[in-house]
Length: 228
Image 1 (cartoon, rainbow, N blue to C red):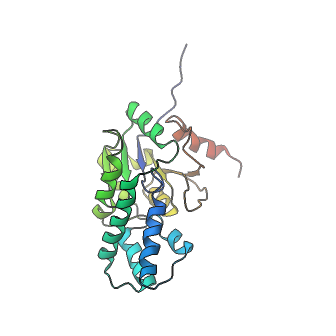
Image 2 (image 1 turned 90 degrees about the vertical axis):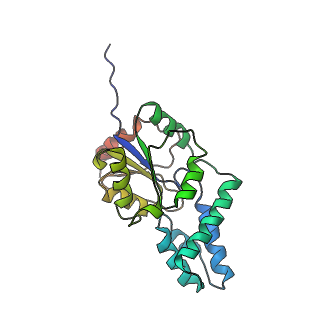
Image 3 (image 1 turned 120 degrees about the vertical axis):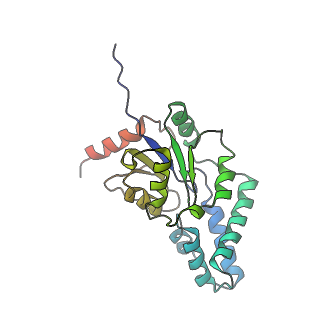
């Protein structure tokens, strides 16, 4: 009997905040607390506007909204410290993430973590996972251009020796999805705080629960078959 093996991506490039772990509430809480402490106003719309953003760009926005007497790097350092406290208190993996990560490793599919969080936070998250899941980690403090620029995902694909067009990016935010598409990758969007709309090369699903490695490319095949 001949068995048909489903094709696999050349590599899978993962976002972190909101995709691997439910850390977006930590960022939102830290942003709001800082602005309110300085007498500014902050809304849910402000928080949502910053999801997936470069941290220095976010800090400039926060500084303006709260008239905060701190530089953007100082604001970033403060926010990172607050989020680190939250991570230290315990994190929640998003549904299906751990299972897919470990299956991809078992199948030999290279994986990279691509996040606008800084190296320290990324290492805190990766350190809670089994060794060897990520062959590369690209962080916001180590790229010139943050998401939605393609640089972070292009850097990750290059580090893995993979053609971006043969990679699947897994993201939760529109900015991150835009970065993946700009890099030429297929993007699987699993929205967390901000909704997403399917487009060519971008498939939206509710959760990674039950998603297996063999499903990753198949989801894009199915999207091309869906009636317009």
